[in-house]
Image 1 (cartoon, one colour):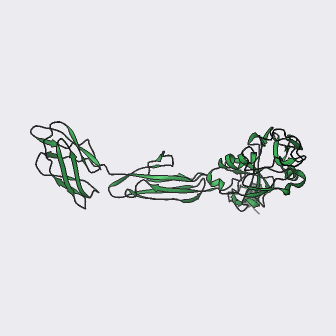
Image 2 (cartoon, rainbow, N blue to C red; image 1 turned 90 degrees about the vertical axis):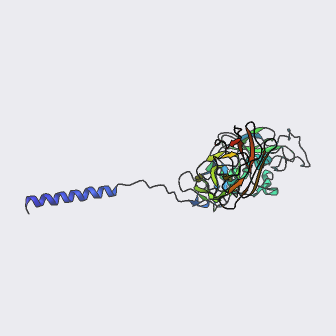
Image 3 (cartoon, rainbow, N blue to C red; image 1 turned 60 degrees about the vertical axis):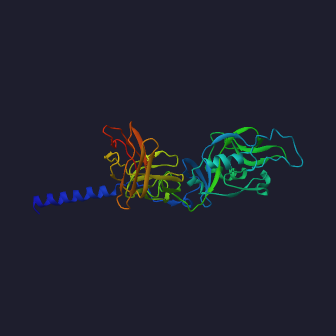
Amino acid sequence: MTVKFQRLVYLAICLMLVVSGILSVPRPASASTTPVPLSSLSAGDTVQFDGRTWIVLDPSTGYLLMQDSYVTREFDSDMMGLIFDPLGENIPYFDPNDTTNIAYYLNNDFYNSFNSGARTLIQSHLWNVGISWSESGVTVDCNIGLISANEWNNYKSILGNPSSTFWTLTPEGGPGSGMIDFVDTNGDLRFGDYSNTMKGIRPALYLDPTNLVSGDSTHTVSIYSNLEVLTNSSAGGAVTGGGTYLAGSTVTVLATPNPGYTFVDWTDGDGTSVSTDPSFNYIVSNADTTLVGNFQQTRIIPTITVVNGIPFSITVRNTHGLFTGTDNTYGTLTGTASVNDTVISGTLTGVPTMPTAITLGSGTIEIKAVNPPSTTLDSSKSFY
């Protein structure tokens, strides 16, 4: 074996070792972006739902608890330190029909703070709101609830210690005691405080467990919303692109003007202009949205001289039928429009002695007095 051949073999072996080393270096796994069902997550995972962070309590049922307190409120403001009531008439149950109760706030103000697309995903649920030793003895059907005392004990291990005390939905003590169980900052369940005291509110809710969440670490819940596209004038043109879409996706809406019309802009439901491009790439929001494609008739600025008493003609597009414009002082401008690419022919009667205006169709032409008696259509004026 020659020295040259030995060197080649040596270099080949070194190259193989280098390649083998590179291939064996562990690489971080890339995060999946493929959406997965909510039910595939684990208890204790967090999800993003309509801009808020929630903790998954039970992925199989889609049960979520807000990660932190949303507001600080009384549980029921009219339960003013109730004295013992042996008849049990004043137990401060979680009651969405009582306007002073936290349940009313949660199922009205708080529920309506979600965008319309998110609200469609929240499922109504039968909540156990009975006293601590018999929570299932009283139930309430509503959209938003709170965690119960027994549930806190069951899920405490995945929730950890809260940053502030917060209410459960479980009444405590004898009938009419006016007390509600709460959780302190050590994560301990405390057996009752008067319902008119202030504590944190951590809303709970149920989503369809088959609903998709993003496959990345944010686990953002997929929200679909409706996009309605309208036109300010069916005669002006057509619009397309409406439908139900995933929030955050991009949808192209298209406005096509009819002959004799031009596209002006897209406006939202508040009338705010959002684009002057007839082909507009709209990013779908979490809320149902309406976009209006606005058209106007093509601006016509004709130039013509009209002499009093002499027949004239003027071309106006997309206009049909008989037109008569009258000025009580200076006479009448009349003409008949043809069906195609309209030509109006007529006569101006009367002699204007000063600048005046005569209405023709839906626009105005200005007639100026001259000497000898003739009039010129001012080219700075326009009509449709």
